[in-house]
Image 1 (spheres, one colour):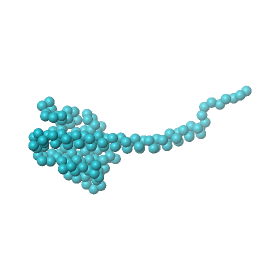
Image 2 (cartoon, one colour):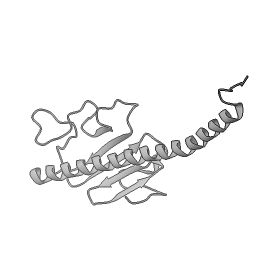
Image 3 (cartoon, one colour):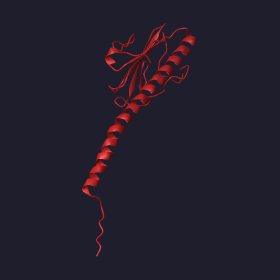
Image 4 (cartoon, helix red, strand yellow):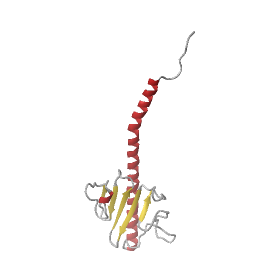
Length: 157
């Protein structure tokens, strides 16, 4: 009589578990970094879009005064008509709620110049600054960034 064995041995199962653990330790951090880069690129894109809207507003009104991120039905121009926008603050991604946002964009402006600061909700990602003079910088320490400089440890973007 021939006896056929079916199933897996404990050693075979342990080898599979170890292989899955090795793949996970490589894949998960790579995916997290990919998500951070994606969120950073989205924030940079939105900041440049707001900068273009500000310049268009200035070309029509000869001043940055009166520009608001939150649009209304009688607004001149395609401003933001989303629930999470105010006159000077915008949460990214658009229509995200407070607490689920990836970035918070804050706008500071007067008649002659403006600055946009993007604060990351992820402490491992960059916070950004863009000004009307063309100054662009990023820093992983959010507290170092104000509306004029990115402080110690900053990089350009």
